[in-house]
Length: 250
Ligand SMILES: [Zn+2]
Image 1 (cartoon, rainbow, N blue to C red):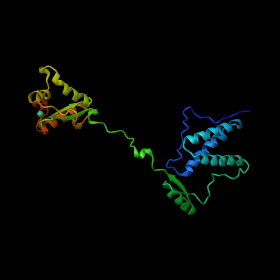
Image 2: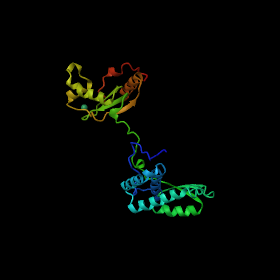
Image 3: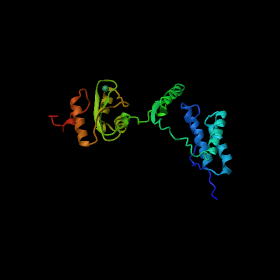
Image 4: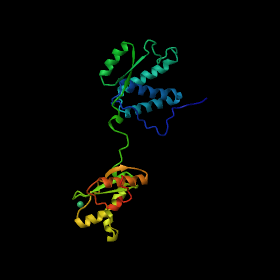
């Protein structure tokens, strides 16, 4: 003889709908029935007692009140025991007249009244539980912070005057801005226009908020876009030679 028992995966957490969560009572009671069905139908008689105890403890852990657990476990076991005797009665069979389904949001108290009303009018009511966590917490990716973007034409502002610098990079903007910031530590002969402006005027740049003017992954197009912006904007510390290769027709 084959002896079977209710098998639970190693990842089984014992977590079900919390009794006090905003779900229709019917669904919460169904949790009890489903667990009992598993514990009872999948297992040999010798395991049943043990399994029902497990269901009981599991439900307690999910905040089901004791009297509710007791009542519905008993009810379900009675149902399962009698099921074989009156096999012809299928509890899940739908009344042929009640084939219209209607889906309504679940609102505690109100929904039960609505349920009775709709059912009497011949509708099968399905509840939608709308207050789900993912409606409150947006799961989409956060848009990248400017500093994490790559392949951009950017503008760096002087904190202390109206001058700014326009450049382009294929790397993370953060990396390029850091280079600009640290350039001043190099020997004078390697100083950038930014470092020169800082040394000559005692000004400093707003390293934390580079402005992105354009996004272009192809280097040649990005260089042209960069030169285009340098031509267009005033008050830049960029050298004229930065745009030399840009034909005047741009
Ligand atoms: Zn300045």
